[in-house]
Image (spheres, rainbow, N blue to C red):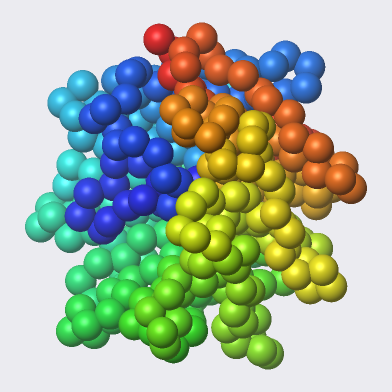
Length: 336
């Protein structure tokens, strides 16, 4: 997922192009399995959104409080949904969780500044700072505790992707030649994916390694954004096609490059991929036809990336945001 966001106002997760929260019916976080289908995880207030799931099935995301604020949560089968709190402000969101239960995201402090944070399995929150600017946000974590996201630079002159290794300062990952970049996911080998502006001003998906730096993954026509990566270095995201619309989910490998994953409907429908596991199952969403009025959570599977509709919790729309090694999918759905 992720939905379009800004540091100041995160209405939904980063980079998913759907209507704003205020225009939506009530939505609830869900977990989906082959055996039981889509299960409503409930909420601690109004709508709730699941963004990440670890190997044991623990889920991280955020919910809308009864006063309209956003608060991060961690959900477990035993304990249900727990509010993770904030740095002292009225805002927090969670976008990543590792297998030990460490959650990462961002939160406002008592002064209103939004910083990258991590929550321990016990729920203790820690401010991880910035690249020198006033704000930062985290979107992914691997099982080594490496965290990625973006941060304003010194003087707030730009926003750059970062890598934060435990015990070290944030590392600025640079850009593809333009002024801004953001990192969305990191795998076990510290291979990082995200998006960056190029010297010509376009937004392109990137793959970063310590040895090679930031590599442009290209597009399916115009702009692109890499959102998920597996330990096999397979990358997923979305790209706008030639002509400026629609946008389609993609699957990228070093050998084959960027492949269009298609949609639930005709070629004019929009789709996006957000997460991929080691077996190659891909989670995301697709509109059902070229009118782009109804979207459903989907999974692409197999060598031919067959798409499957996961349905909804009873409402019109849904989307899946992440998938774990066992094929458990999390996301959110309209409930009315």
